[in-house]
Image (cartoon, rainbow, N blue to C red; front, side, top):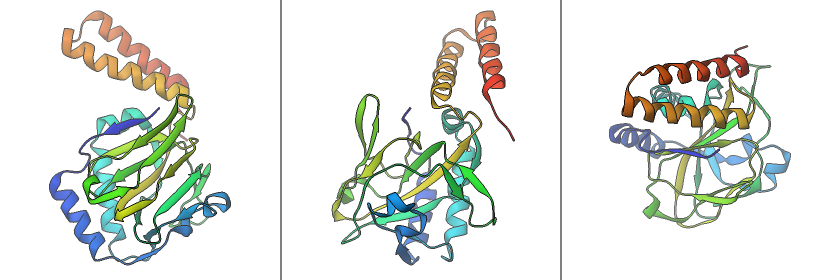
Length: 229
């Protein structure tokens, strides 16, 4: 399931993030790549020691926390602290790869997050760079994603995906990995579709008896499938 969320960041948040990133130092992107991904990865990212990384992470996590669409799409249990990357010049692409299933939490030795859901938050305006398309493969084919700055795409971490070469300008983004309360991607898709339909039914008909009963069915399915520990 691929879900896009427009304007996750407000205009002032986006401006603040860009200001902090402009004053940050970029290192090799290989720090978060597994053995297979390292063969395909050629970009830059902020190091864990970057001065403004904590403030940038807080900004993104606060935006995620207030997004009902993100919650229903990802059903997050744990979110790995977000990372920030840049594609420009000679460091301009990331070939096809799949994200590692288990991601180490740098701030907590011995702690891991299972990557069920991946997300990319675009921080560069699409007209400011050529290429840099996030290409995600699923059972229906390949989908190219290049969103407006401040917008987010959420997709299964199990997907094969890539970022096409940036041939002009620079592409800056935030990427993150989420352990979902519902491990199975098919179950998450059913819950998301059901929740979206319930929202529309409430708008059209209010809290009628059938809507109340369908809402109960949604929560009973979530109760059956969710893991919280």
